[in-house]
Amino acid sequence: MVSAASGAHGGQPYGKVYLVGAGPGDPGLFTLRGKGLLEGADVVIHDALVSAPILAMVNPQATVINAGKRRGRHSLMQEDINQLIIDQARTNAVVVRLKGGDPFVFGRGGEEMAALVAAGIAVEVVPGITAGVAVPAYAGIPVTHRSQSSSVTFVTGHESAGKYRPRVNWQALAQGSETIVVYMGIHNLGTITAELLAANLSPATPVALIRWGTYPHQETLIGTLATIVTQVAETGFEAPAIAVIGHVVSWHEVFNHCRPTGTVWPQESAQ
Image (cartoon, rainbow, N blue to C red; front, top):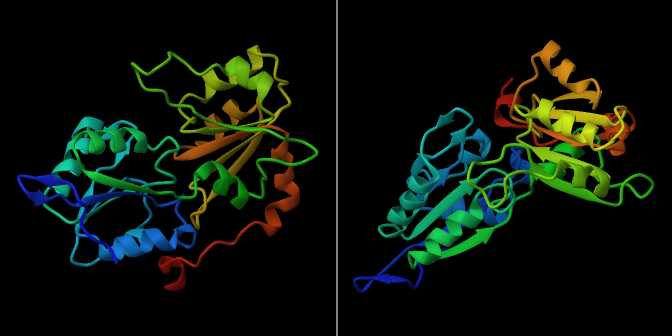
């Protein structure tokens, strides 16, 4: 049962906002908590990469707003999205902000929660499975392995201007983490690989690029730090994708045949 929040504006209660992680795409990885909130929502404001089967769970009576941000095609600025969520919470009891992956892992959930708290709107986060764990698993790649990797670092490959520090310290990552998982790194892959090579990471270090992870049409491109940029150019490999860098990538050849098969999506079952 979902109820309105206790905040008030002019003596009237505000609604409550739920920052819900939709996971990486496969509807079978969506949480039961998230599904229940979608079924009871008055308004759903979703990102571009939320999959169609998950959007199909939304209450048919709800208002659905696409606030998706894709590279080069920003429908709304982040400040506008923040205000949109606040405005919807002032006139609706249950507002779901549906975000791909996990709201607090490169999802700007922290920014949106801060804006809501400042506006006096009650807010709750519902975690989702992040792509950095699920997508490699669907490619048969464990991000940690006792004999090869006892550390894993999640890092964004697409940094915003004016952020808290000017750049990712790739040299420190090269020396300090055995597995590096890069979100949104395809467009800056040349720079990232060059930085890691300059930090004395071996050119033979395995790299996996995984596109449309957990979707039925998931694709994986395997290479090394020395070859992967050329492979991307030759194959036309494009975003959305994550990169996994480290020796755990070698397990792809061993485990790929027994990777998760995923949920049967509606479009698959209709074929």
